[in-house]
Image (cartoon, rainbow, N blue to C red; front, side, top):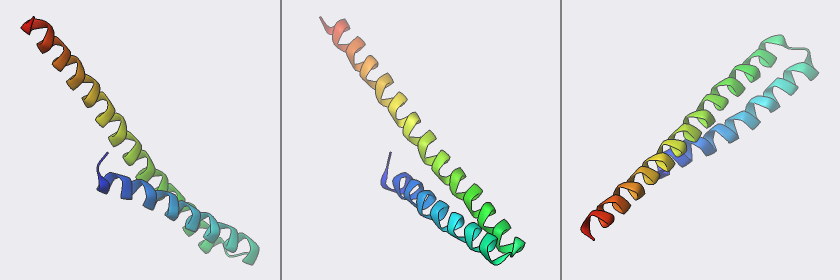
Length: 78
Protein backbone atom coordinates (compact mmCIF):
# COMPACT_ATOMS: atom_id res chain seq x y z
CA UNK A 1 0.00 0.00 0.00
CA UNK A 2 1.47 3.33 -0.97
CA UNK A 3 1.11 6.58 0.97
CA UNK A 4 -1.87 7.77 -1.08
CA UNK A 5 -3.77 4.56 -0.42
CA UNK A 6 -2.98 4.80 3.29
CA UNK A 7 -4.18 8.42 3.31
CA UNK A 8 -7.39 7.36 1.57
CA UNK A 9 -8.01 4.71 4.21
CA UNK A 10 -7.29 7.14 7.04
CA UNK A 11 -9.52 9.77 5.42
CA UNK A 12 -12.27 7.17 5.28
CA UNK A 13 -11.97 6.56 9.02
CA UNK A 14 -12.00 10.27 9.86
CA UNK A 15 -14.90 11.01 7.52
CA UNK A 16 -16.82 8.07 8.95
CA UNK A 17 -16.48 9.49 12.46
CA UNK A 18 -17.53 12.93 11.24
CA UNK A 19 -20.50 11.42 9.43
CA UNK A 20 -21.57 9.54 12.55
CA UNK A 21 -21.31 12.74 14.59
CA UNK A 22 -23.44 14.57 12.03
CA UNK A 23 -25.99 11.74 12.03
CA UNK A 24 -26.25 11.84 15.83
CA UNK A 25 -26.48 15.64 15.84
CA UNK A 26 -29.32 15.46 13.35
CA UNK A 27 -31.14 12.86 15.45
CA UNK A 28 -30.77 14.92 18.63
CA UNK A 29 -31.93 18.07 16.86
CA UNK A 30 -34.71 16.27 15.05
CA UNK A 31 -33.25 17.38 11.71
CA UNK A 32 -33.74 14.59 9.18
CA UNK A 33 -31.69 16.42 6.54
CA UNK A 34 -28.61 16.56 8.77
CA UNK A 35 -29.18 12.93 9.80
CA UNK A 36 -29.34 11.95 6.13
CA UNK A 37 -26.18 13.90 5.33
CA UNK A 38 -24.39 12.09 8.11
CA UNK A 39 -25.50 8.72 6.77
CA UNK A 40 -24.36 9.63 3.26
CA UNK A 41 -20.99 10.76 4.58
CA UNK A 42 -20.62 7.44 6.36
CA UNK A 43 -21.36 5.56 3.12
CA UNK A 44 -18.75 7.60 1.25
CA UNK A 45 -16.25 6.98 4.05
CA UNK A 46 -16.91 3.23 3.92
CA UNK A 47 -16.21 3.29 0.19
CA UNK A 48 -12.85 4.99 0.82
CA UNK A 49 -11.93 2.43 3.46
CA UNK A 50 -12.96 -0.42 1.16
CA UNK A 51 -10.88 1.03 -1.66
CA UNK A 52 -7.81 1.21 0.57
CA UNK A 53 -8.44 -2.33 1.85
CA UNK A 54 -8.71 -3.70 -1.69
CA UNK A 55 -5.52 -1.90 -2.71
CA UNK A 56 -3.71 -3.43 0.26
CA UNK A 57 -5.00 -6.89 -0.66
CA UNK A 58 -3.86 -6.41 -4.25
CA UNK A 59 -0.42 -5.33 -3.05
CA UNK A 60 -0.22 -8.38 -0.80
CA UNK A 61 -1.14 -10.76 -3.63
CA UNK A 62 1.34 -9.08 -5.96
CA UNK A 63 4.10 -9.46 -3.39
CA UNK A 64 3.24 -13.14 -2.95
CA UNK A 65 3.26 -13.68 -6.71
CA UNK A 66 6.60 -11.89 -7.00
CA UNK A 67 8.05 -14.04 -4.24
CA UNK A 68 6.88 -17.24 -5.94
CA UNK A 69 8.32 -16.04 -9.24
CA UNK A 70 11.66 -15.27 -7.61
CA UNK A 71 11.65 -18.64 -5.89
CA UNK A 72 10.97 -20.39 -9.20
CA UNK A 73 13.80 -18.44 -10.85
CA UNK A 74 16.20 -19.49 -8.10
CA UNK A 75 15.20 -23.15 -8.51
CA UNK A 76 15.85 -22.94 -12.24
CA UNK A 77 19.33 -21.55 -11.63
CA UNK A 78 20.32 -24.59 -9.56
